[in-house]
Length: 143
Image (cartoon, rainbow, N blue to C red; front, side):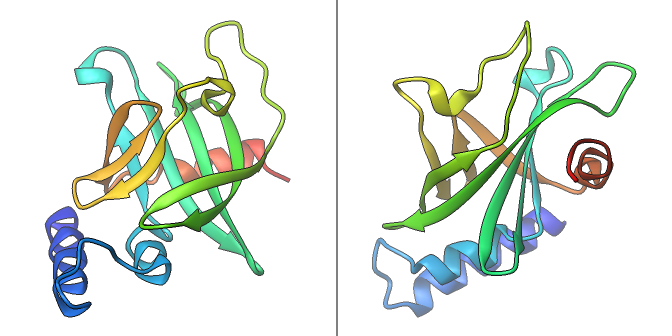
């Protein structure tokens, strides 16, 4: 229900902005801020998630690797800015070490973009979720 409401709000915002194919950076941020998006790898394995938030004047995206038996196995905190029509640019990333995962922003074909369907991140579509995994991740991994 929450997802449908968010998608309807985003659609209305696009229509009200003159039915153009682009939406403003502010509208993009309003659509993702303080929301968690999840990708379950087609229900194989625990999956990954994204949580968008702001602290002061800076905008952030928390990339979470979900665990099996624990809510979050690891996180990467990206400081981001929005450029163009829903395209996110990574300004900096927190330290991350893992034997199993690579920081997606270090890949040559890294993509990070908002659309009405969700967030396209590292070639995978993330859909808004009602899970509250980010609060646990922020408590454990962020100062």
